[in-house]
Length: 142
Image 1 (tube, one colour):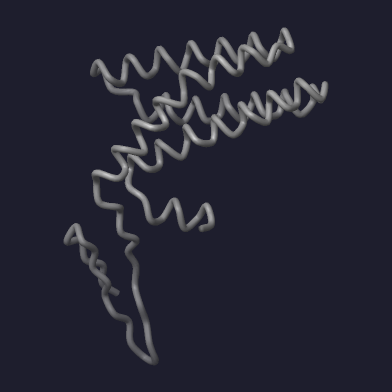
Image 2: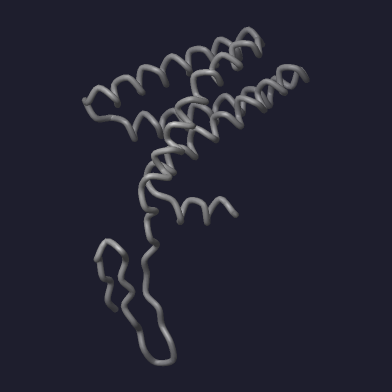
C-alpha cells in the first residue's frame, strides 16, 4: 500500500502511529549512517526526525497530562538523538528507539480500535455532479 493510501485510509491514531514509525525508520538509517561514517546523511536524517517531532509536538499541544508527558518524552528523545549525532554514537539512537517502540505499538493499538476516516468528495458523470456522503454524515454537494 502506498503512503498516500495509508494516510487516506487510517484514523487520527493511525496517523500518529505513522509518525512514530517514521522516527523508527530514521533512527535505523541514522545508526547505519554512523556505522558507515556518512555524517552528511546522518545530519539529514536527524533533521527529518526533528521535523517529525515538531509535528508530534503540534499534535499534542493540549494541557492535559497525556499531551504534557508525550511532549516531555519527545523533547528528551530529541536531546538524545542530538547527542548521538554530535558524538557519532549509535547507542544513543538505540536508546531513543527503546522509548519510541512502545509508543508506536500503543498508537497502532488505538488505531485498530477506532474506525478509519473516510475520504470524501464529489463524483461526476456525463453532464452531472453527484454528492458523496461520509460515514460521519457530512454531505458535500456540487
